[in-house]
Image 1: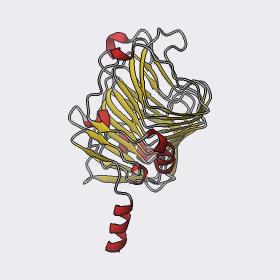
Image 2: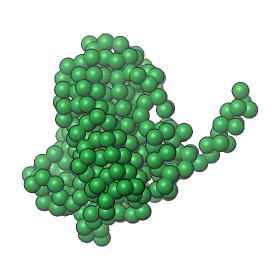
Image 3: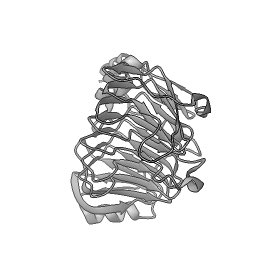
Image 4: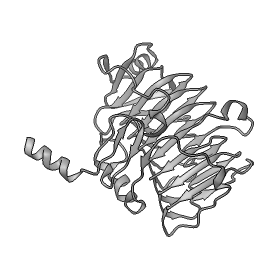
Length: 319
């Protein structure tokens, strides 16, 4: 057993690791799930989630609702698919994690409002009547990792109203229109300016239509090493003077990888670097020099390997 383990480690020696907030990505990143968040969620004191010493396993909607809203720092394990109605509130200091590859919620979603230090991993979210995961009202330090999200009514992962220091990583999004909103309204600049800092890394946007993400006000937002396949409308949108750095992603069958205006919003700013494109259009860029520097150190994965890495590693059952 020990020999086999050493062989596996040697075979995947280029794995992802996070050290002191640094993001280090290797070509075989898909096989090694991080034990702590990379990117923005590693800053501002870090994101550790709930206590690993206090663990509750839930199999019903009532037990799930109670565990998520409890003031206790704890790990909440969801076993099986639980049918819920509406948005369940998640309190601070929680790790919410699925058991196996097929556990999660259907019919509703999670609402994080004014809370801090939450981890959501390895869960299936489908058929939500509103958002699947919603962050609002200055929620900070959240890690959303290795989930499978589809077929919601509104957003799959929406981050708004001054929320900050969030990492969205290794998620598989499919069968959906409006995927990820970052900043909900053109008139909310007073609350959002200087906040909404998010790292999107190693996500698979699989046949979805728009908002991957759709950004207002935030600067900088880091969109790194994601795989976009068969996107209907556009990949990344920057509006309302936001600053988005779109770096070393893999765009396949995407007519508009990046846009700087959508809807009635004023344009935003986009800087691009070394994105890999297959049967895809040219990125739209604007005022790249105004996009602020990324505040953490990282070594990105080569753009040409992103597709294989993300397809192998994104979604549930990989941690």
